[in-house]
Length: 114
Image 1 (cartoon, rainbow, N blue to C red):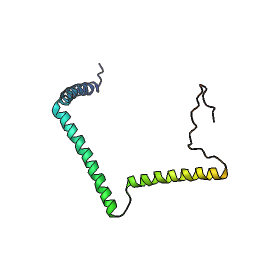
Image 2 (cartoon, rainbow, N blue to C red; image 1 turned 90 degrees about the vertical axis):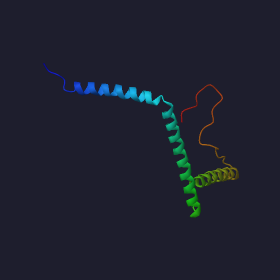
Image 3 (cartoon, one colour; image 1 turned 60 degrees about the horizontal axis):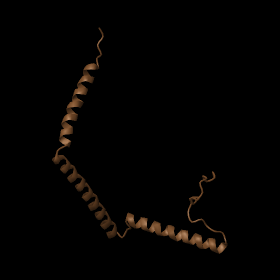
Image 4 (cartoon, one colour; image 1 turned 180 degrees about the horizontal axis):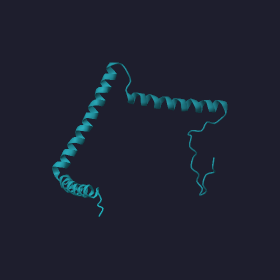
């Protein structure tokens, strides 16, 4: 009679999973668990805010721009370049499209394939 050597381990693993799910499920239902998770989440958010403020102060002390200042500058440069392209298009008589995406049609037919 051949017995499966892994049957004992599969049975034990199944029993262990049932026990862990029962204990874990009951623990997750308690108010203490939700309060602890909420406190942990709040601590994480406060730590991130403190790190951001600290790095911004360090960059300001070193007279370097922060990430948000780089993003603002990039957006401003993009708007300036778009305005220059429109002005150049008007001066040369070649209209420059305002965006890379085609505008949606008002009809029921799908747009032609490009």
